[in-house]
Length: 574
Image 1 (tube, rainbow, N blue to C red):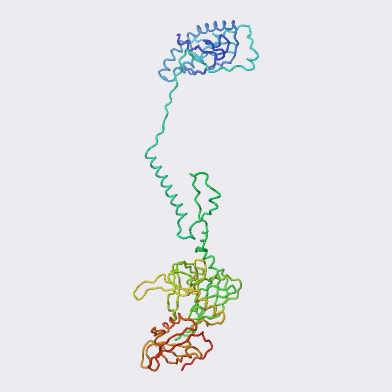
Image 2 (spheres, rainbow, N blue to C red):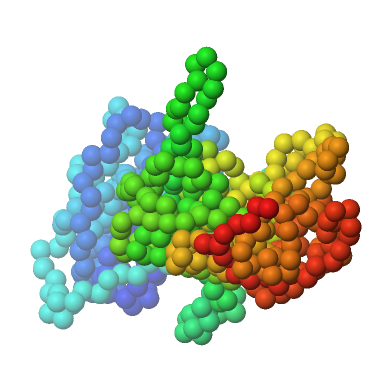
């Protein structure tokens, strides 16, 4: 019973004067006991309807203190049945909820002792239901305060002192509920998997950035980072990594002027044209007659006023020539001149301001240099660009019985590319495409990647002559007409025979005559025009050609001085 009385009216220490008290008011200064909210545990479903106690601060007064003590004694006597009820109901609560028994018992006592505005003590407002002995606060413990109204000082009214937290000296502290702390433990398998994924992603990212930054294989393909950017925008810390650079849409040219394939095509393609020719062909037999045939090739603009270079075999015997420019404009072209020996022809269209090609120097190129071919393959695919390298220089190739020194390339070349351009890494014209070798050899080997072009230095010499004179004059000239006998007969042995001599030529002055058989040139055996042409290819105007001939079954040596081509000379045929 004494323990329960302590729970109902525990000793508390005044927060103003420090006096220990049992009732709801300090017996020394009159400060009201601080409120403590306690939740009761009662076996009833009725709701607590007791009004919340109102706070009052009563100053110290001897009579008020004596009255408060008397009132506290009466409250203890009236609360006897309530204490027994609380004692009976608190035991089951401890069995069901041992962690909160002390808290709920204090709450039960707090709610059963309500306060009124005029009354200092607390009573139990809610006890055991249906019990006549239960005393409620208004009926049993409502004791009015003395009629003498305490005087509250003005300073305390203006700024009342807020009570601090109550200090319990005799009452055991409440047992705090222990809340289990749940600790998350990482799974070793999940940690290893996550670490592996992060490492894999980092590896791929680093490899991708390395390829983007350092791959490419040439100066033109390598991405350059301006030095001034690195100096003007230093990193904030040593750990800060630079942002990955993006590859530009158009890779800049190298410092030596080398262009990319895209830049070469953009620069050179507008100077390449498509050529379509019509030729008249004769047929014989029952349904013989003449008919027109079409052929196609390519050409390159070499002057902005309409001169175009192409192959002789593209326009040879043409009765009509049409030219289609890169922008699709179609012109009719006229023949300026052609040269079967050099396989070069020049045609012209009536236009101005055309995009002429930049002429390069074929003597400066090296084996392995970049080579780009632009032309009209198959006669229907104008503007096609293929690339490769210079595979060889000075390839001695015979075309239409003419021996020529050509450039070799592995860039793709097809029918229709004839007359098109071969360009270097600076977009300059270095050759005129004129042949390819394909198919299968006599031994059964497949031929692939063999294309040829006339060096631009040789081609432009012929083109300049054709534009100036209509014919080639700047070429070493013997001044003879030749015929090859492939098989010996009763009158002539197999070999190369002279069948005409031009008056005033080097051959005429050297005494060469109709019927002479040439068996050697500069010590090299000769049996065909192709072989003689190969020797002449290395000669210049004014050089001496030493010929060995057979005349009337007698062998003799003749020295011939080479001259320019004589276009209007008379040919001696006897």
